[in-house]
Image (cartoon, rainbow, N blue to C red; front, top):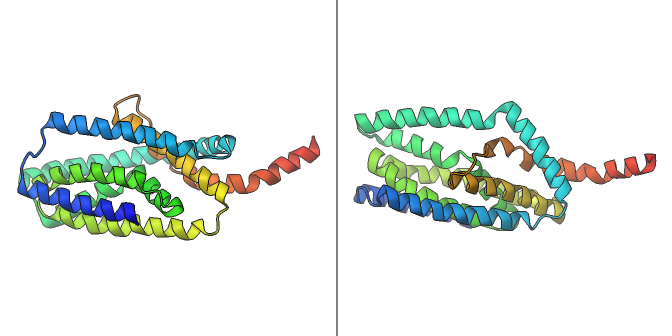
Length: 238
């Protein structure tokens, strides 16, 4: 729960700074800061991936998960939600902020996206809080801007993130007790690939539809569970 606790704290701190100081950071400073975070996210994803065991099965999970995600169009649905939120955000900023609107907007923005899910899972499976700590920095910066425009409701979104991410972390921790060690490592490696994709997007390189690969996190478990039986079956045939 360390990552979620820090993430919750940075949202509160960023929100308070946003309410206290307007235009705390220039647009250029924010861009430079986000690029630095993006480089860290990129290399952190590589670090997680290199801890994997069965790289062929990891690739298979990414392919199957990506196909499922593309069929569902997870990325497209999230972008539609983000577009709707952006429109509501602009209207709210023009009309004057309210506590309810700030709470709902910030809760959705901080909660949606693969970093919240992969970070919470990694924290629960292996106690690795790196992804959520990085997300905490990003959310703290965003909370500063949101609170300046939408008011104190943004602070309440910290409670949503605490319950949402904390719940995923606790669920992952309970599952970790029944999963073999190699599967946990490969599940973490899949998460590392998703984190790498997030870093690529943050740096403005060729866009990767990272949300479409989220099903790979769930595909890797049955794939690795049944792989030995499938390999043994075909070995007997050939």
